[in-house]
Length: 168
Image (tube, rainbow, N blue to C red; front, top):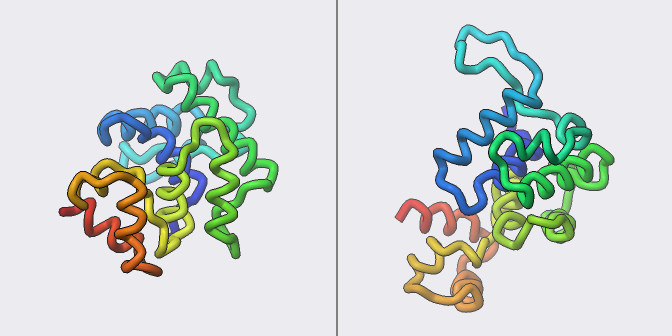
């Protein structure tokens, strides 16, 4: 089963500047509040991730009440509205550069998040989140600009290099 691009994009926003555990907790709360019920043999797997329409029609207070800071709630809602309207898509024949530019127009979505979504949701093999501190540290504590320059030799497979660096 392929990844759901919208779900991954929501998780990317929820994971900004928090621990993996905190992001997982927030994702669970979002699914519990806005996702549809699901019957499975596993009690812990009882909700589907929310559809874009569900989050697009939620109030900011509803989203923020789950412990999500207002800036991230706004980013999630803006992304949901764009997806629900069809202006933003994560599936089909989409151009990763165009999608990244669309994401960057959403308040609360920066270059790292846009690159991460391109890498994971769009399965773009050449995404490179040059702002990532772990990448920059593993490349010798370099700036984002220098990391970008260093990454040119890995084109068109920089996403694979990113995964390798993150595991280093």
